[in-house]
Image (tube, rainbow, N blue to C red; front, side, top):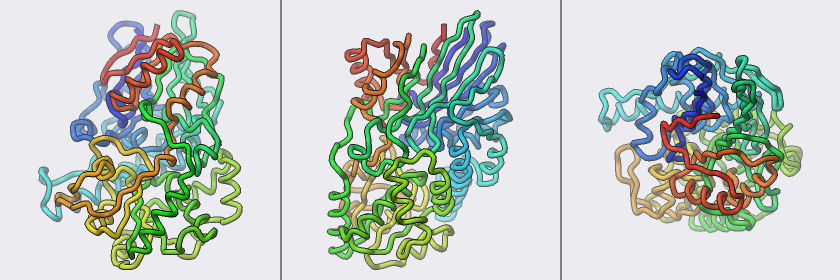
Length: 477
């Protein structure tokens, strides 16, 4: 029985891991076993604890990983997989490999930093606190990556092959079209990863990658994300609201703190800040990008222009590299980061992680959340159970480094920056399919988002749509 087993991002929005088993002998060990994505769980504690659990199948028995893109909830568990014995190839697009070369070592570095900090202040239930994996272990896993170009067919075994198609989510992001030959018949499975905004830059301002995922797909089984399955993005331009929030904060003598995903979200946000400053719409205050990977991420951003929208290409052509802009600083070391906290004048601080689950953003928020003159601006999705979700939701306080931090700063969220397609955009894309899939499994969404999208797709398209359950095995006939 060939099947897909959902080892993550089922019942939650992180930890994407989908196992394809081509065995036809009943015991699950006679065929090839492929993992589509290998993401880290984030958010609520019961999910995070699964990062420390072994997979139901030993890592050494997985033959290959197909990686859709370089966000941690899709790639962040790869170093742990290798640590537990995986030795197969990890297939990804060239841009995704470049980004993982920055994202994964940074993740290992930050986990080591966080473990050391908790051990230092003696606020840990574990003695000692340990990182999920180290910087060295993250660097080691990079040796297993193999580049696959968009549209190139890779034959993994006589019965299974795949190719990448554009997902338009972030730089290098792809969907994985997996073809399985069963008894002389081909079955195509499409794993969407994360699906980018369908519409143009007027509706999705600041969008970096060209608009829209690849149209005209064919699939017998569709495994699709549902992150924004229960809500729609605002359709207005976020720049006036952003300019107002920044200007008012500066007038109060405060600083703006922006938790941002270090891959692409930070880069497109600083280009928008630059444009607003040059147009005189916001004051020219110092901008600090505080992330060990910031400089390398900018270099990768400028390298892979082949996927960019015309607007992004124009901005890069007009302003050049952010690394050379006066007033913009990139903190690569812990000492550089600490100097930012010595700044007692208005400034803008952009730091990861985007959902405030760890990293240097914690230090900046611990210092600035108690001050009413400051503002925190969220420009990305906040999964339930994360600190970002707590802060954005209007809580009076939040726990950071074991301490209770009062939230008195102004809290603003700009949903237009999301790189996930919403229900109308998803339906627009799904209507371009050449056939109706026999079954669609919704993953990578909170239960309410997945169930509402399921009902909408059933009503509007007449498709057979199911919400995937954690550890469920779905037979591929």
